[in-house]
Image 1 (tube, rainbow, N blue to C red):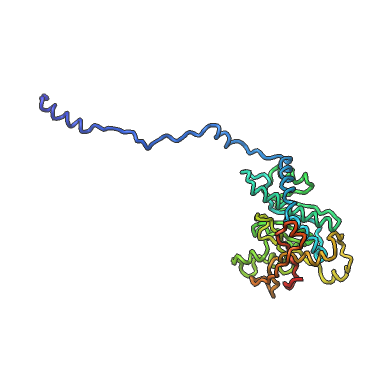
Image 2 (image 1 turned 90 degrees about the vertical axis):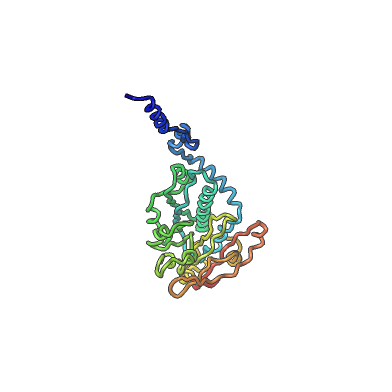
Length: 327
């Protein structure tokens, strides 16, 4: 039988085990993602049309062709064409997409200007040779609009490795700021007549090459005349870029005499002797076995008066003979 005393004893014990649950003020439900954003993320990318890309190219092209850089590129090739091997086809590697996914202006400008730099070289050589030069472009990031834009300009667009396979001794290879394996694939079969890209001195200056590595580039550094490629003002479009151009042999030059097979559109005779000394050549001298970091520097020339009046400040190149001396 339960007494009144027993009830009084049990009641406090039950109250001791009473739990109070509190809500944490730090626990909040995660924000809901708006359904509109989810739908946008899942939407397929919309590419620009070839017509839109063409319009942007023409705008960039018109402005850039008024810069000193464009004029210096033309003068560089006009001044040195007579003593160097003829180019019969041109290959452009890795120029980038003209329709970047983020729409970045800097990346787009760099791709357009590098393309127009390539086409400027081709146009000048075609004019001097009085012969058209077919162009092939290879870039894995090309969009359908990019391909339509380039084919609309009359050029071929190919998939890798077709452009590498097309390189021979009569080719211009234009490949700005590429990785070393790309250069090796382009140069391993044969050294082209002309190469525009990152020069040997930049690779050798990194200090990570062992003896005999990147032999195709070091061989070209010895066999070709090399020049600094004109710079694009304050932009990095052509930074660390050299022009390598295979010289004609002395026998060929003697046989040709005045008959060079090149249309003379360079202006007065003094043009090839004076204008070519504007700026400096891509540094480096021919060593006994392979190029080293001991480079021979050519003193900078003065910019011609007409270039100064035009506001030109970019450097042109001075040709150097195979032994590293200025001609």
